[in-house]
Image 1: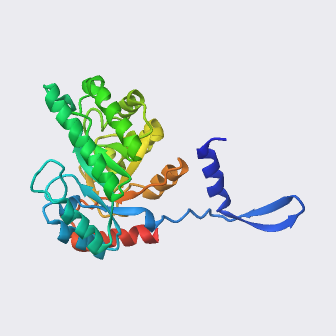
Image 2: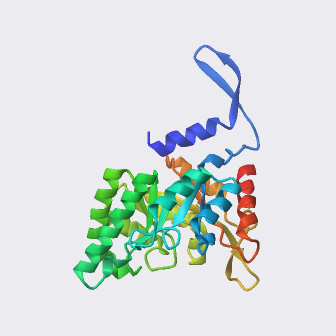
Image 3: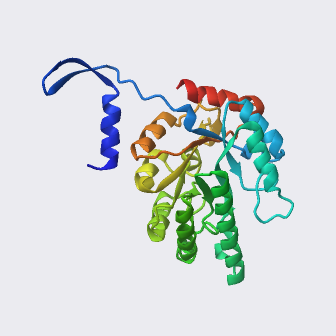
Length: 302
């Protein structure tokens, strides 16, 4: 029996209870309507992206006060860098310890220069990738986000060998690498995502499943899931809906049409045991300082 089937059966029995027994058998009474399994608040992290202009101390303070004990750290200054000499890893360690927040994922931009014109630049990009993975290991991260070169589908065969080398290194460290769904020819196209994953062919290389970004790119997130579900290594959660002009817009978690409970159910059924990063990108609706707490509470009571 496949892992997915075992998990599905376990979830199914969580929706029923025994009403009588006899030797060798149990009779179940099905409870209708079926009660969905509650979302696990211990499995969420908060993306630092909405606080990307603020220093680490303030960023960690806001996220910790909202109730989170894990962070998905955006891989740009002032939050993170392995190439900028002004970045202080000791400060990152200090704020993690001060606020009791674990580095769950590094939202790096590694892989962009795997399409650079010179091999020297591509090897420099490989060095950045491995350093980022090393930091992830040192801080207990389960995954890092990566970029699919210039995002063009025609570049897949060029970047695959570099990602294969990266994946071999990542496997030794036990850290997953995921391409986040965005609007490029690769990351916004489920079939292209599947193609690059099949060619890299590593358990530690896959897709950072981002339903809201897929919808913004014109790809249905439920259909996309079926295409690349075998390669999901991390998940980002936010919400959105179509406005009166038919344009996709982000909104507060729970106010849109992203069925994040469906996302949870489907991804969990794959045997996924890592985190779900809430990504607050609606500062025009509410300040992140109060908004993240509301998102935490929305997830908690769902």
